[in-house]
Length: 104
Image (tube, rainbow, N blue to C red; front, side, top):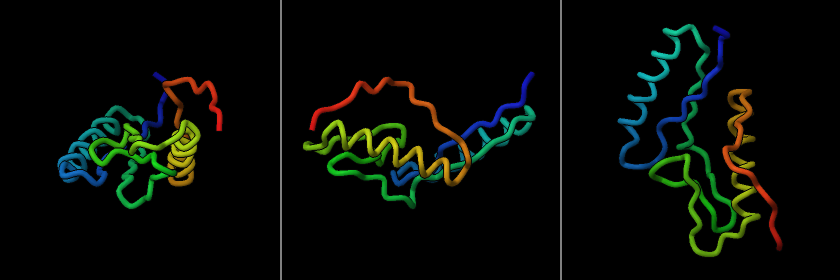
């Protein structure tokens, strides 16, 4: 089987931070035991906010519109997260959605 590099996102700023760090560590150890590369990423110390769009405090895979976020804000936030992860881990995140554009 081809060796893979896997990004584990854990931690964050919610009340579940500690359990997220512990489960992230367990996942990382399991991935390593299968001889894959693992990169850990904790978004807690980053300011992931653009306009009225921000990363969820509960789960960093969710972005929140605080009421006035535009689609441009959300796309810029996605790119900010992707760039930060790449700078830290040299891993390109792939979107599971298709961005179709926005109007100002």
